[in-house]
Amino acid sequence: MPIYLYRVLKPGVPEEACPVIEYEHSWKETPKVDPATGYPLKKIYTAPNLSKGYSEEHTKQLLSDKNIEQHGFTKYVRDPIAQNYVRTAGKEGPGVFSVK
Image 1 (cartoon, one colour):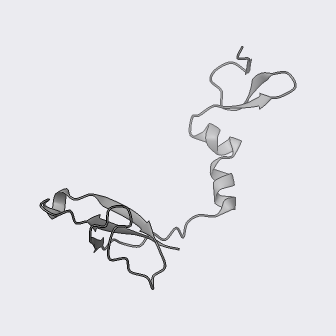
Image 2 (cartoon, helix red, strand yellow):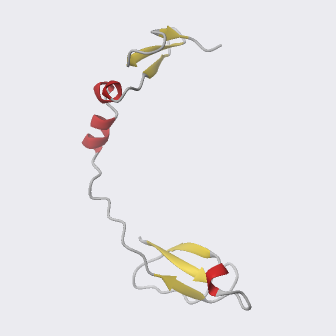
Image 3 (cartoon, rainbow, N blue to C red):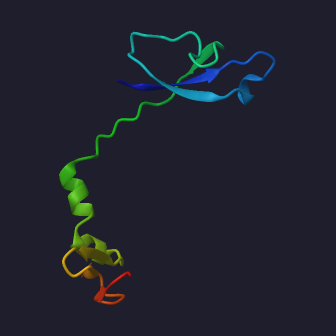
């Protein structure tokens, strides 16, 4: 379900100073009052957030050892048997270290 923004209209408080809340509901439903306080709500219209660029494969590519190293970062992976961390990407820092 989509998340909508609403301004809680408190009596005696300028509209710009009233708090903004997020409210998740169906597009068919339109709340009239804040369920927590009972004050009236005014819907805030915003641009929709469509995450078209996300894919699991793209995320794997961004977090690959090759990409991490190309951008100058170093990645360490914990070795559960030896109880230490081994460098898997990057050139800076020790090859292996342990935290005790």
